[in-house]
Amino acid sequence: ELEEGSRAGTGDGNERTRKASLGEITLEVAPKSAEQGFDERGNSLPDKRKLIAQQQTGPKKQHMQFGAIHSCCFDPSGQVLLTSSHDTSYALRSSETGQVINEPVRGHSAAVFAARYHPEGHLMATASADKLLKIWNMESGRMMHRLIAHSEAVTDTAFTPTGRLLASTSLDHSVLVWDVESGRELMRMPPGFGHELPVRCVAASPQDHVICTGGDDAFVRVWDLRSKQLIRKLISHTRNINTCAFSADGSCIITGSEDFSARLWDLNGGLVHAFDADGSSVKGTCFSPSGRHIIVGRSDRHVVVYNAGSLQEVGRWVCQSSCQSVAATTEYGGVVACGDSSGTTYVLRSVLAPCGQWRYF
Image 1 (cartoon, rainbow, N blue to C red):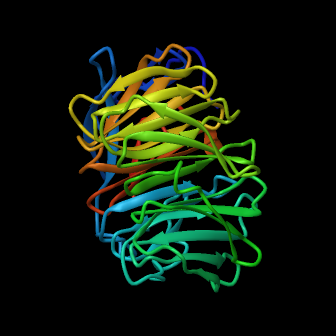
Image 2 (cartoon, rainbow, N blue to C red):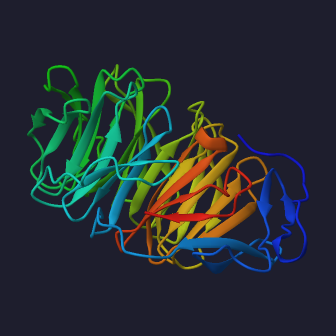
């Protein structure tokens, strides 16, 4: 996933590029001049050197989303990026080139807070402020199921690894689980053990029968879908939890909150570490697919990468506005995607590969 060690670029004079080895990530240090057609933007490495960030100049893209990018995720192959927006749309783009695969689809009547791929890639689910959860066929573009049960905005959704079940959360304080094939509601997490305030996020464990949820009560709850019971309640955050994600082996959870922190949890041992967000809300979190890195998106416009072993920061980059969502894939040597509050989507290939380039979609 990552390129180890340090290398020296080839070329002479202004074209020469030096590369600095930083932990497990090799990052490209800014050359003396930018390539034609790009604007140089400095982003700080932990040792205070500057990393080149290149913004494509030229005409505005015609295919755009105009509201905050509430979610972004890669398909199972890592070659397609799916984003959802406050402007009621979802969109598909090439992870490598940024080319829009389809016009943004407005399949809801209000903001789309989450769009997630089925593990096999042939379906996707969208969760919206219009109180609806929808399942779509990716080949035909047709809606398969319109899931109605929540009484307030649906804030997040997640497929289990087998793809048979779909979990959803809502401002109505509920956590529901659905059968994907039939579209039937299968279970509602027990009210006596559930959230007492709006629920903002849900993630599914690789263990298939386990999910975690977080919300405005500041608690992380871990559920067993087989027994329909709460199996763990993680307490440390002091304000709303916006985001949660499992590690690839299912042993850890990373959460982000309005309390200006991201927190790493061990399911067996509780809180492992609190990452200080420098007075900003944490809007998006994820692990790299290998589990070696943690990516955090913050309201102060920073995307920060930590080594999951040492818990040390190994890089950070700046968006144009508040970061709202993050996702990662190993495709193309390693890529991180980010969506911000202005409706801009980014692909950052320098987090997991030695490229040092923003791609603005």
